[in-house]
Length: 88
Image (tube, helix red, strand yellow):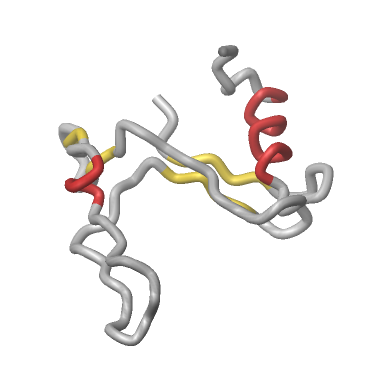
């Protein structure tokens, strides 16, 4: 089970970048003046899994968002380097 993964100094990733499956508590909403729609809370997307003995919820789905050339593929390659990326 992957809870979180941090990579640093790999290809174009110089500073630490973390991919985390730990759900955040509480709903997030954007400011009233913003053009963006309200950001959905974790439970609106998919219910989390409670881990026995820990006070955290793990998300069943992870996604990586970013602009072109921001290092998304390099995060996946770092996971693959460690043998953690699933082949599709």
